[in-house]
Length: 418
Image (cartoon, rainbow, N blue to C red):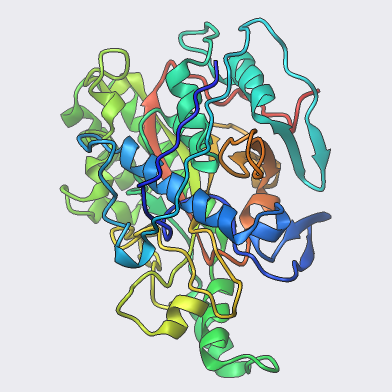
């Protein structure tokens, strides 16, 4: 059945989700034969500034609801005074249940992306991604409620607990950044702040960041095997890191890297790991977001990006996400309105070629009886996913843990549905 809610008093705009700014034009670029968006998420998906405001507010609510120990009405720390708004209306609806034995219809595929309505994604999820101990599961009402939040909902329903983003990896080319600053000039009409922000964004390599996360997840999964307590897992992990001469070996034992498993809620649950590392596996999702989130920094950095923010450690590739407050890009021109982030789910796919991997994400929250309309789910090839939008200048690849008996990614993920 449909569940409809309206929270007239809920207030927050500069929060979290998966749609982008509202600008007059969208540029297109070719990458490996696939067209990829380089402009705003909002215009690409036909969203108004009011749509973006509601989307950001609803995803802030999702973030709050997903954090253990927080009451539903409590705002996330990221919802500071500048981001709150009194006109928020929750017209989101929970998609109805789908029969377990109903097969999905074909996706609509174009330019490196396949798209379908959320109801059809539920059918595919039940057939392909839902398996627990080899048995298909019907998506529960609670899971459909999570899914209804949009891009973050797709990752949320697959990861179990709300994504925490603490174990994030990226790749930044310091030499390229310094060389381009010294040997190139701003484009016509481009301010110095725009120039520096663009050069910093172009110095990140998402393919290398993804590869780094995959390599680390592989080491973690080797360490999890046959480790029936956390001490054994940590000892195994240090052995794997030593054998591969990995800089993560020298992380403090209290760091996010070594504490990630114990801080995963499903590790403590009876139907999850139940404190047995061998029952867990490391998987990956991605988050795109804006760098200029420090409200104390210059307005130019909030508009055009902060070149120093969210750079990975040069040795480990780890990104310190503690200052990520899910604050969107500030408008530089009248009428602009940007979304604060976009989530893409990867899981545990085994496809070696990054360009052939598939990233699942959504366009906006599910509101079929509003002007926004029903939620759509996308399956994007890596180049399409990593291209991002003008709303985001950072892309991280994050490791989390889920029970090993969850499927969430078959050995081969086909784009769309054959």
